[in-house]
Image (cartoon, rainbow, N blue to C red; front, side, top):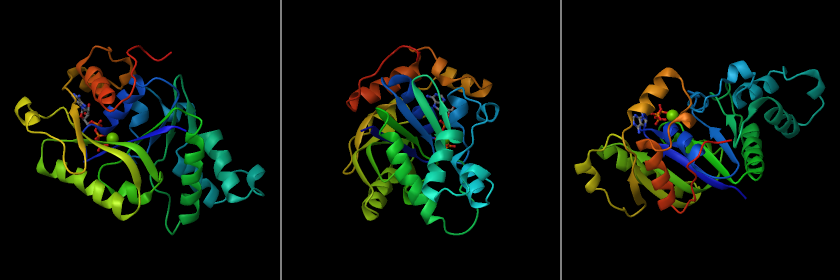
Amino acid sequence: MATRIIVTGRGGTGKSTFSALCVGALEGPKLVIDADPDQCLSTLLGIDLQTEGIKTVSEAMHEIQTGNAGQSMESMPLPEKIEYLLQLSCLHEGPGFDLLTLGVKWTRGCYCAPNNTLRSLISELSSNYDFAVFDSPAGLEHINRRVVSRADDVFAITDPSAKGLRNTRRFAEIANGIDFSYKNLYIVANYRFSAELTESLTDTEHARYLGKIEPDSQVESFDWSGRSLLDLPQQSPACQSVRKVLEKAGYKTIDRKLT
Ligand SMILES: Nc1ncnc2c1ncn2[C@@H]1O[C@H](COP(=O)(O)OP(=O)(O)OP(=O)(O)O)[C@@H](O)[C@H]1O
Ligand SMILES: [Mg+2]
């Protein structure tokens, strides 16, 4: 059973960067799920979905709903169609990790049935890996969408603002209200925290404080030039601090490049 990691937080706090660096730091096969409609995690991992002809899950679902999924699938029941398309067209298979990109929410109307099917398929798919790393869109609506229904560890990446910490508390409250279960909720200070403010961070009633991600000019320049964050030097401040945070949460980390 995969350990399920959810990375959450307000907009622009560094969720996708943290998720990508987790992929590089964790040992064992990983399923990475990009739930942000902006779909930037693929780029941070050095993957060009378009060139590879990989579809987002939303695109595949749209094809099914508009009857454009291909004749060979016409007679298949919906769950089988979704499973087939997910595996065939949506999964990027890479060294050490596979990536599933959800994309923008598909078309109008109630799609509870495909959403439910998708949830159970993601759950099933995750069981083939040691880890499932789920990069969330900004805010908290994603837990309502419930593409995953439970997590082991939730890393809340927090910026130096009162809203940032409030967001972590809201996560706990919303999760509680909708029976979204998780084992641990962790606060991770993002790269914008000053040394002074970092000192004031402690555990809260809902979450344990794990540490800070150091500012790293190479993260910005890699992001800017479209280079994979998996190529960052392992000794870079961001890589080191992500490893430290993961180790504090009890994970075993590696400091070599994925092969
Ligand atoms: N440790 C770091 N040092 C310097 N810059 C960083 C660091 N981590 C992230 N950044 C920069 O901060 C910006 C936002 O990062 P990222 O895209 O990971 O945030 P996000 O929370 O996923 O954003 P969104 O809410 O839009 O999905 C990017 O320009 C990224 O390069
Ligand atoms: Mg992001």
